[in-house]
Length: 270
Image 1 (cartoon, helix red, strand yellow):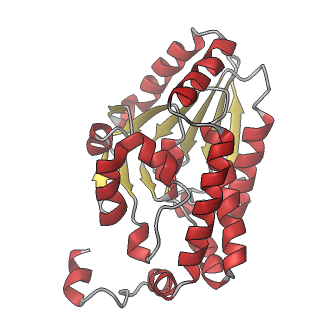
Image 2 (cartoon, one colour):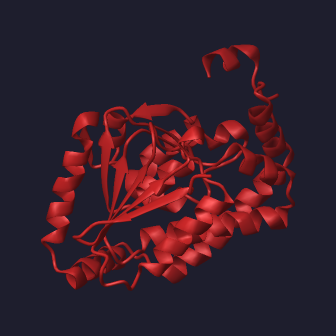
């Protein structure tokens, strides 16, 4: 059985973390979240690590939540859902506030929680093949846990559109709204990532960490404030998952049917 998270460290101290579930478009469940969280925690103070690259195996970056994980959460209590959301929130905090620079190598689709992963990285390089969506409302839910990071990237105006519409958008649009910084042809993705790594490795390791702290301080962000936000958002998503609308939305998605709030014309358009 393949490992859900592949790790490779090169001679320069670049750690590449590859979400390794290509058969489900690198969707994440409990095991992948736990492994990514552990690696991020263990590498915080490792002087041998200079930079991290996060990417996906196969044709996708990450499809967000795994269907079996979603099925389990649909049947879980509000308390269990809250604890589940807090585990995801912890992993995203560790990624966002990691003292090492992190590059997202976006090789394909990033949906839902996958967009959250992108938003937590410092540098973001996407293939022209990449597609994005924040489609939680179509399940009767909201992008609660990832919302602070995505909001900071795209701003209120774009968040009000994409949090509500659930529509898909391409890499060019993702760049225009600030979600990703660089967009290149698929065959040039590795070259572009290497160029960004070259820039980073020219900086002093301690200076890079302090530079990230400067950005967070200027934006009024810190870990304690983020933890409080995460607890509020975890309670919100837990409440929505067990609500009548959330149960109907998740059930419709898992059963591959139209949610009751949609008429047939809506379903055809969606």
